[in-house]
Length: 305
Image 1 (cartoon, helix red, strand yellow):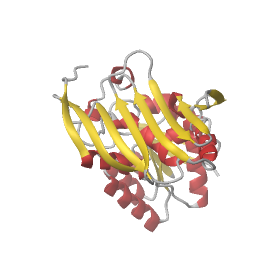
Image 2 (cartoon, rainbow, N blue to C red; image 1 turned 30 degrees about the vertical axis):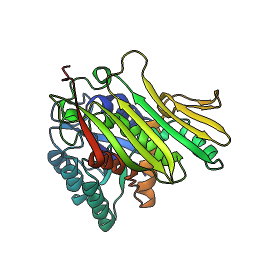
Image 3 (cartoon, rainbow, N blue to C red; image 1 turned 90 degrees about the vertical axis):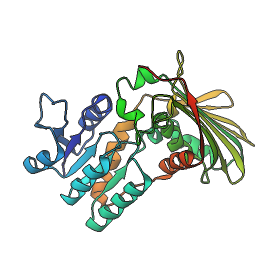
């Protein structure tokens, strides 16, 4: 069975990741695009989801729009009887994604809240290795240059856009997947540029059953970009680098594979639809919400792109 899919939002992440991943996923056919600003040269393109659903026969919808306003789009798609895949973060709040999960369950539809970094090459091997070790300390360093990775994306600085937690939530998605027990935020410092409504940097203190965990997120990094998670255990030190694509055990590289994160996500989406199941894990988003709740706000230098 081929599942006809519509893609809503045709920005950088959609063009770089979603379009090629869909094309390479057996059993999926991209049938239409909805975007306020762009069109696809080879597919029916619409300015909004409502017009697309009225004109095109599709079974599923992927939402690649900013998290603000995504709830309304997902709600409309579910009401129209469509399966829904959500780009990360799955929504602007925990409550709205919880409500969407309840709607999908009631309608017998699939809702897939994706965390692409969990599909990085070294993540599953890291999870398996940690399952048999006693963890002593957890450190996350996720620092990048916002001008390089998010140019011109004003929504990301607005309420609900998450600021530095937009990339930082990728690290939290990996950590909540590989660690054997839940993380809990105990304190946070959030640095807000004087002219922005979302943080440019964050220092988050967490624990896992009393074991310390520290996360440092910063969007002001120039030069080498850093996406690392390090876990000290009684059996040595594990480090995931390059966003989870490389696994090191006591300094020896064990896994280094090319990026296939989104291809794995779409294969998973197709499988969930066929099985009549959903996958909605909100642990990473909950940690971000708790960091905002507990965070001490500090003013940073104004950010000008």
